[in-house]
Each structure stands twice: as structure tokens, then as C-alpha cells.
Image 1 (tube, rainbow, N blue to C red):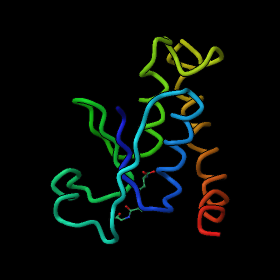
Image 2: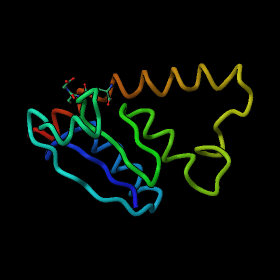
Image 3: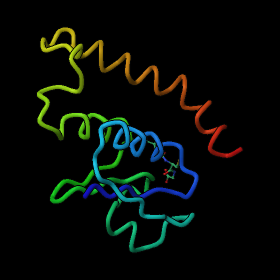
Image 4: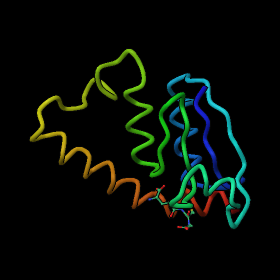
Length: 113
Ligand SMILES: N[C@@H](CCC(=O)N[C@@H](CS)C(=O)NCC(=O)O)C(=O)O
């Protein structure tokens, strides 16, 4: 089961959970207090939120989590249109990061409303 550690209204964790929902992957939310306590820092020394655990896999960085989740299926790539060549994967990743940056503020606004 994928564990997503997040603040109760954390937008970055929400996008990770949202992708799990879309892909029908079992996941659970583990609330993190603010500021994160010692036990959380023992788990994630960077102290950033969100944080993902899935079996032996642990990671911070919500966009990386989304790529991990997208690949953590029987599918060889996140979606049919995802490029297979390295020369196209990098711009596609940059595009994904740009989209996250641009809509991130909107999502944060919605979760705080
Ligand atoms: N790029 C990271 C940003 C994570 C981040 O900065 N989260 C904030 C909370 S929304 C945080 O943990 N701030 C506390 C800190 O950086 O120590 C991601 O997308 O996961």
C-alpha cells in the first residue's frame, strides 16, 4: 500500500493521491503535523512534505512521486503518449514540471479555501 505523508490540506500530497485515485491504486494518507516532528525527520531527513513510502521505496519530491506511481504499474510508461526516446523524455518531463508549477498555485488556493 502506498503511504502518502502530508499536511491535512497539503496540495503537493493531494496531487500524488489524486494520481493514485485516477490509476485505481490503493493508497493511504498519513497526517503530518506542522512543523514536522522528530519521528518524521527520522523518516525524511530533508523534513519536506509530502513524503511517500511504498514497500522498500521512500521518496520526497511530489513530481518524482508522480513519476514513480505512474511507472509502478504494469504499464511500461506513464501513458500511451509518453515518449520512449531520451531526447523527448527530457522535454516532456520539463513540460510536466512546468504544468505543476503553473497550476500548483491554483490547487493550493483550492485546498486552503
Ligand atoms: N518540491 C517539493 C516541495 C516540498 C516542500 O517544500 N514542501 C513544503 C510544504 S508545502 C515544506 O516541506 N516546507 C518545509 C521545509 O522545506 O522544511 C515537492 O514538490 O514535494
